[in-house]
Length: 348
Ligand SMILES: Cc1cc2nc3c(=O)[nH]c(=O)nc-3n(C[C@H](O)[C@H](O)[C@H](O)COP(=O)(O)OP(=O)(O)OC[C@H]3O[C@@H](n4cnc5c(N)ncnc54)[C@H](O)[C@@H]3O)c2cc1C
Image (cartoon, rainbow, N blue to C red; front, side, top):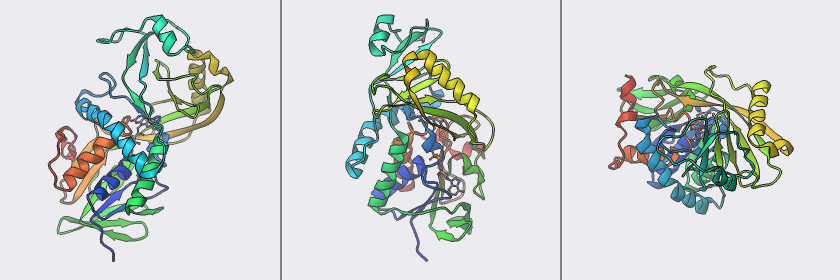
């Protein structure tokens, strides 16, 4: 039977980026997914890279800020490596609020109008935030391509039931159909991470519904816009994503027509020129949440068993730092980042 150095459970954006980072360090890596790669939360995400204070739980700010800084290089390397475009847009975001945003100079109505001429002034205060966005579906495709190119092994369509132990150490995993051997296993199973035996991590699904529109002109909206009822995320190909709900309804990915209509209507109220925009798609995904809304990153109490999940609303933003920091820890390199607040041990 073939032996790998590392098995990654889950081919979402976290599992794939970590597999690539480990393979860069010459590890023999196998990525397993019970379904198609990258078709869960990572497929549903809007791709906002929202690392501004006020958008994140405070303990996450340092990690999010490093990840944001790593993004341009992460994307550049991946695009060179694969020849694919992941639509990284670094032109900022507009936050529209009913009350002034503390610590940031509000935009004058004329400035807001210049930045986004198609957003109607509804008496909201606007501030400019130095943020970015990326297309998570394109990013997942590029990561998958990079993994294949670098020689990461994959097996899709077979779920992992348990991590196998011998003398209380990891020796591999048991799937529905077979077993795979490796001394190191990393659980990157997103909202399902807690279902893999023997350790159970307190991840839960938080549903988000979204829709996308075809803008009548490509630059009708130029920036990410976060308003009280909805956010808008433009793509360079002329799509506009409108999101998102935050629902505690368990493992339910059904799309509700009335909810989609409500978000669509909120987008039209903000940008009446979207009246002419065609509805392209609607969908729902399950964010991997934890009791303290912080990710779970690091070694578990079982030797050889690691976890990288619970990224909740910020998994796309946190991808570069999660992959890098986890690869450093697993490879025994000094880790330059403080991961104590995210240790799995906080739930023991
Ligand atoms: C509507 C919505 C909007 C979002 N917007 C943003 C945003 O703008 N910016 C941002 O940073 N983040 C955003 N997020 C959050 C982001 O999508 C997630 O944090 C991130 O995708 C998590 O990635 P993951 O790889 O951990 O999980 P997933 O992408 O869910 O991947 C987990 C994988 O594990 C597999 N798996 C599960 N169980 C098993 C098993 N037993 N065996 C084998 N495989 C298994 C699944 O099939 C899946 O492919 C959003 C999420 C949603 C739902």
